[in-house]
Length: 163
Image (cartoon, rainbow, N blue to C red; front, side, top):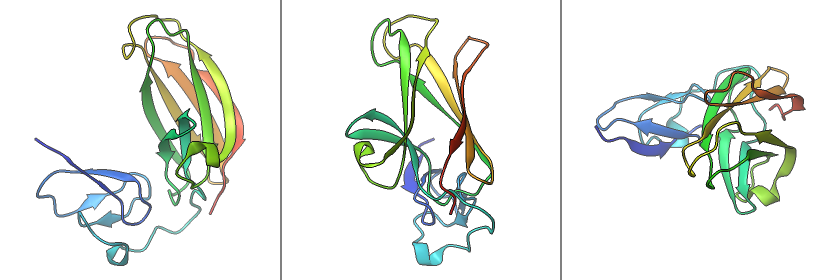
């Protein structure tokens, strides 16, 4: 089975659609649409608070991974998994940015923290899940948990923009 990668016509989040699917539901903004629909074809966005800007993890100054899309309904919880980029890496550096600019360096730095790793190994073999819990008022709790380790590293009380 091959999946086709497209974006949500409402919030721009990535969608994976099986070939031949007639409808797809965005996991971020919960809007249902036909694959390849234009923004004009989208059903109305659910009422209630939404995320006011995109939240991303900065990998380099020029490269970021969008985790939470602008317009996502609140409250929400989402986990993204990351792997080590170097052999025997000792920690993950988590740099969170908020804003809608393409380059992470052009967005506001929300938080930056280091997560020590217990496991060591070749690059790409040690993983950690970054889980975002965002309340309806934009208060966020970020927990980073290395696979196989019981206690996560937690960053509490961050404020995200609400739209």
